[in-house]
Length: 108
Image (spheres, rainbow, N blue to C red):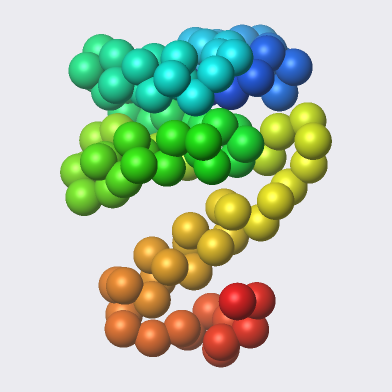
């Protein structure tokens, strides 16, 4: 059975444990990259990653962009929303349909 994980700083992710998700606090980019690889190997179908951690390990996350599982989803951390998640959605839609149908070239 597939599971859901949350990766990020402790303060941003500890509440997800109450929802039954596996939480993995990390303190450095190297630790986050290693943990992400391990989670992908351990058959996690969805891995939520705080935007701050995603910014640090973007090259590692890029390895999983073309595979179906795991889906790596950015979420805001305690420091707030950086807009990275929405930019990722915009990019994915543009790649899928060939043009910006959501924002009409706004929010670049």
